[in-house]
Image: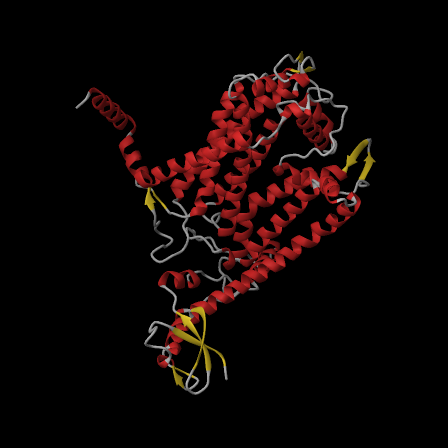
Length: 557
């Protein structure tokens, strides 16, 4: 045995004797993870966060978090000799004088965008498949907090270069803070150290960006992953998959190899974006000056929907009371909308639990079509977000399409209420239609498009039988019905306000439904497909060419 092997063995024995490492490693290495592409969304979130930590560490070596004035004498000639802040000067020096600095800046910015996007898309997958249900409510809350903190982390980092575009964003944020009734001005003075812009906000944002928020994010991610291990991983339904097992691959060596390879794929894609796709060209904007207004400036996509909400809000909703100015036209579309969104997102697992009255543990995921109301609510929220995001660029849309910005704004004010409601109804109808199609397919088999005429003149369509996996996917789910007083012992007291709200909520969720196929219906359908239909034997239809087919009656000659 070599010296290295002896040393490694000694370290392993020491760790095992002191903290019982072998039990932890063996148990964790045998942890089973299911195999499905949608689970990669969470991995992209984790890997992009790791890339953010690595590139952000590099950037802190050269960035100067100071608003003190200096003169730029760097490589970028158009700004040579200009009076700028030290933060902006160091950002320019990073971009033009530090070897690899611009690449690291752009990788960091792209990784931030990917991190926020992957977090939100991952949460959408969790929402639409019901992965937030018991016992994962707390993990859903942690995910919601991660998404919210990721947005604020992106905003603080976006503001650090102190260029004209980021300064405009900070000015908008300060206006949002000032719109908070009574205490807004005090919060603004505390954050900016006096009148805007002041010289304190850059070092404060820098501390928040590199220390406070990353520490909280790292802690939440660690707890999130720990709970995934404790609760075991969710999985999509299929033969052999139950609420009590997990079908997949062990963490070591299979999943570790796949996850390691996927990390380098994510890193490579983000590095390619940073190298080939320019983003946040701060030298083109110039240093921040509070007096100019940058026409056409747009925030990053994850903040653009709030900008759009402000643009859609009528400007007349402002009044003075008791010596205070109440700017509801700013406060409602920003602070109120943010708090409402955060509240609904955090509390949703308990909202749906109140509707279902279901407190069982769930480890099998839902097909979105089998939960039409939940799916419709998700699509409605996405529609609302997209409309606000579009309205955040109404000036760009008006300029590019040669339209009136006032007409665009008025149209979006109507659509932001009408389209989400329409999206809810249409999505729910689509889900119910897909359920009816699944029911028909489970009973009669898969359509082949082949029409056959029987000897006595009847026309029938030939259907192919489903595999066990296909049939299981269509019939395995439970159907939930509106809560009734007499048959739901887990329902709230109907005489209380909560009980009345609970039953109305349950009716809203489950009044429109399609009952899944029962075993008795499957058996009867199987018997019919091998009996007589319309006086002719099905077994006579092309038995020689395809003896496995079944049929269902469609038209008559």
